[in-house]
Image (cartoon, rainbow, N blue to C red; front, side):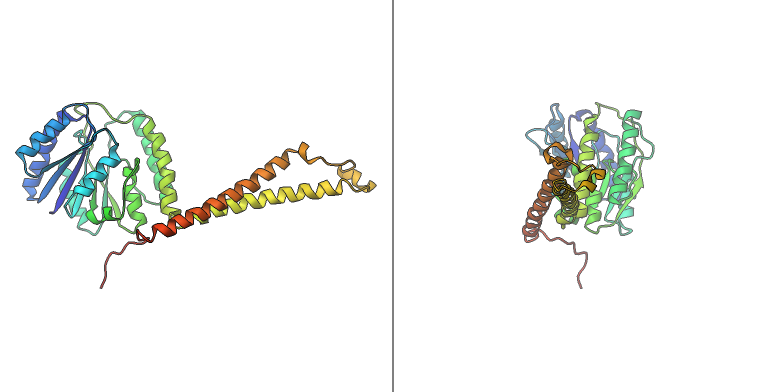
Length: 322
């Protein structure tokens, strides 16, 4: 099969028939061998009934229904596992993504790209969503090195084999291009038309950005230090432990010197015994030493987990053999 289109659905009953019609028109016009996978992520309206009707009318339509709402990443992951196409394209069910963009996505894939991410250059969203989104996208590009203008865009195109190596969980769906690039896949982007919402309301609020930033640090750690966690935790641990050891060594020296009966030490403020329990530096030194030791220990444990994981999942990605 040439193309699998995966569409996560959550309370989108009004838009599904029109979306299916538009995809059908594009597919017939370009003679695509296509399947359309609707993944109902625990909708509370009649979305699943609409999917059933579409599947009864069109043999290319497949449906997956969750028992409850598990999130967009889970819905996409279920669609990827079901998809049979060589190319997998994802798009939202709210009609803001235009199916007429599909031919251009596939044309870019033919140039050798493995992932093509949509870029909503002109957005029909309120300012309080656009401004934080642009800041977030800039931060993701800076921290990961994958320079995309719109990491959050739901319309993306992938080669199917990517998902043999990447498993989505939590809310990592927006970081698939980053995870793919870390495996050596070629990533590009395409400007797409962003249409105004016709039905329903947005499913994302302010918490989306909070979760996004937390996931960003997770992805940054996985892609940068996933195979060598001790390099990060061990470095921070050594710095902290060394600083704590220096502070405690200094305190031990002045504690011993202050107990020597040498009159010349009065000019240094050591004319009377030093009581370490009265100095805040003692607590800081001990805390730094313990913190550094804990990070080093966590690094060793993480290295053991990575070593065992690599026995199951390969730590590399092969493109060709000859």
